[in-house]
Image (cartoon, rainbow, N blue to C red; front, side):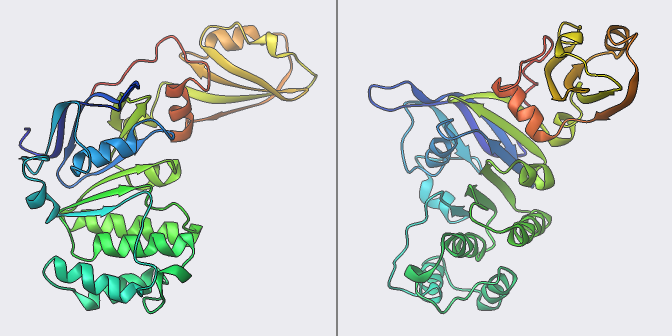
Length: 311
């Protein structure tokens, strides 16, 4: 296991009976003190990965370690240092949030009541109500409090901000950055790309159980393609540029406006539109969402896209 790795997997594979691999030879390292975003749509294998890491299910083959300890042989020791928020949080409906906090906190050696109260205040959460009365968003808030309240060394969060309103999303982001500053390592699966782009250091993209790429958010968002919008004085057809080298994803937003994705130099594109009266050219860098969709093939992939080096 790498000296700086908190989570490390080697060819971790899970095949459910009679099916294709839900997770296929995952080899991944998550470094101490980083926020690692784990991306993929439903069914990609994110939750399976988390369940394997927490020894809730056992792998078909391969191995995983957390804090240098085998996740199967030493799961009890590992869980003492991990805060976990599952994708679906099932708690005792007839208990209040405060009762659940006290019960679970005491199982882990005690409750830091001032810190719990601080978390509840920041999340605008009432600890006195029974769980059955909470909305989906408030149940996620309770789950976050339970995960954070013992200030763990590692947070494993499955879709943590699902159901949170935009204001609470910002509060969640700040809580994660503060936990990181305190030395906590955070592994979060998410489909909220703005959240990942705002707080994550690195991102892993999972597709059909396979890890497609692992890269820093900074490098991913400096990808070698751009969004280009061309506004002409007269109507033009998408075929004007659709065959140009490096150009993909051409659409006509208006009769005189073309949007496209460009990889490489501008010269072939400029030559193709020579002779047309161009009123405006707008160039924007790709968002993490653009890059995510490109890896998944929802947009035509350009010739030079490659799997980034796994670091």
